[in-house]
Amino acid sequence: MPALISYYWNFITDGAIFLVCAVVLGGYQWRLNRRSRRSPTRTVQGMNALARTAWVEQAMNKGWDVVSVQTLRNSTMAATLMASTAIILILGIMNMLANADKIGPTLHILNLTGTHESSIWIFKLMLILVDFFVAFFAFSLAVRGYNQVGYLINVPVDKSGKSHGVTPVTVALHLNRAAAYYGIGMRTYYFSVPLLLWVFGATWMVISTFGVLLVLNHLDHLPQQD
Image (cartoon, rainbow, N blue to C red; front, side, top):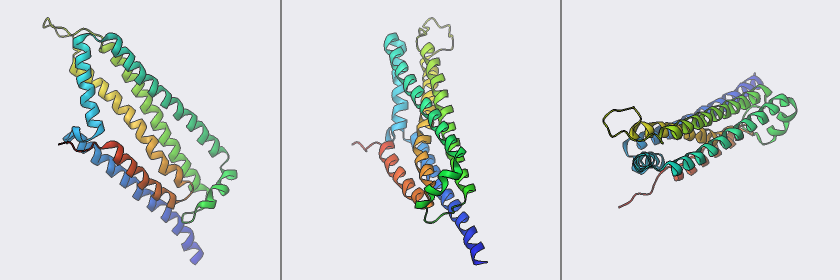
């Protein structure tokens, strides 16, 4: 009976720590999104959205065709690189899943609190796999959005009164949506760190979660200006 309790206790420990870390990271992201909407100048995401809107307006009104295309090309190349990296990581994780019986015991050396069962280890790898699939699709949607904006931003502003629907406001919305997809992809990369270290044990997941939060809090918020 004590052995059975200890067996299930390890499962409960792993699951509870995962849920706590997921809630902490999700709560941070919710708070950041809320602050970006209410006080955009206090967060990097909000400030970048305002800057992109102003840039689109200037580019369309002043005819910055070459500059616009080059800037969007750089963004597309960055998103393409990150999407390709996600695919490589997905293939690597699938290879680990195929050799779970050989790799698992080695990784459990540092696991001091959680269960050592191969089933939970495979479950952890599956979550990491889902995380990078989300990253791949997010970056792919970002590439799609940047390509669309490349056409829209070069449409001349119609000053004759006959609106063709392509205005700086609508183009900025498309650009900010593409940037939002890129941001989602980057978040999945950041959040993959606790998931990856969870493979080595729940303790490492807790440490890495708070480490990621400290880094993100520094990167996401702008210093207050007088």
